[in-house]
Length: 377
Image 1: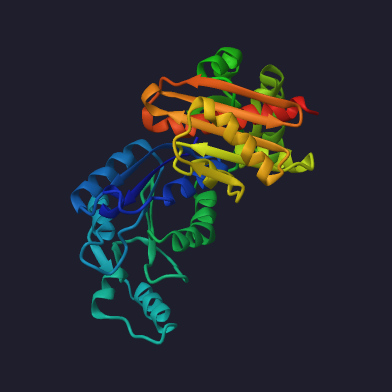
Image 2 (image 1 turned 90 degrees about the horizontal axis):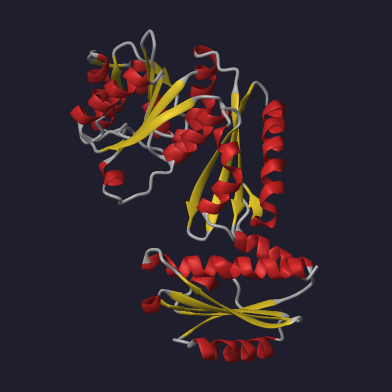
C-alpha cells in the first residue's frame, strides 16, 4: 500500500508560537485516499536538518509532503533543503517567476528582488501553480518517491493540495482505495473497562478498531479500507452496531458530536430549560455550554452547593439545574442536580493530574445529566 510522511517546516511551529493545522488536514486527506501515513515531524528552519529528515522519510515512505519554508526571505529553507536531500542544485524557473509576478500584480504592486528566490526550485522539479499565493510549489520525482513541497499558509496549502496534488497522486500511485473512519464517543466508563468489553474487536485487521482516552471521554475509532465509499460504510456499520450493542448508552455520539451538544439537544427536545452553576472551574462550564444561564461562583462547599442551586433554579424558573463544585486539594468534586423528578447529589474523587480535575468533573457531570434525561423518557 502507498505510504506517506509529512514534514512541517518552521521554527515558529517548533517553538509553539503558532499551531500546526496543516498536518491534520493533509493526514485526513491522505487517509481518505487510502494512503498509509507512517509518521509526521516538525523541523525548524535549518537546511541540513530538513534535508536529513527528507532523506529519512524517502527511505521509509513513497510520498513525502513538506509544508512551509517557501517564502521569499533567507530563512525560508525548503527549496534548498529538498535539493540537498535529492542531490541536485536549485535552478531559476522563468515560468514560476511569471506566477509570482502575476500574483503580486493583482495587488497593484511589483515584486521585490528578494521574491525571485521563490522561483528557484530543485533542478528538474515539476512546478505547481499557486493561484492564491506568491509561493510556487513543486514536486521532485525519483523512481520510488514523490517529494511534494507546499506552502505553510493553510488556505494556500489546501487549494494546491486539492487542485494539483491529489490528481497527481491518484495518477502516479494508482490510488484506487479509500480509508473511511468513524469515531464513536463514550462517557461513563474508563478506557480500561471499555477495552475489556471490545478487546476482540481491537484485533481486527480491516476494519481496525482503536481506543483514545481524553479527559472524561473515550473515543473508539473504526477505520475501514475499501475500493468504494459504500463498501467502507458497510464494513464500518457492522462493527459499529456490535460496539453499540455491547456498550449501550455508554456511546453518546459519533464523529463531530460533543457531549455538551448532545446534552443541550436532549434538554431542548424535551421542551425544557437548563440553568447551571459552577465553583472552582474558572468559567469552564459556562464557556462549554455557551449559555447565559450558567453562573461561576466563588468557593462553594459541598453543603452549600444544593442550596445555591435551588436559588438559581428558582430565580431562572428553569426546569433543570446542574451544579459542580471542585476541591483541588482533596482532588474531589461535588455535583448536584434538580429536575422535575427531584433532587440528587453525587461526590466523586479523582486520581489524575490536578489541572485536569475541572474538565474531568465537568464531563462527568454532563454525562450524569445525560443519563438522567434518558431515564426521564
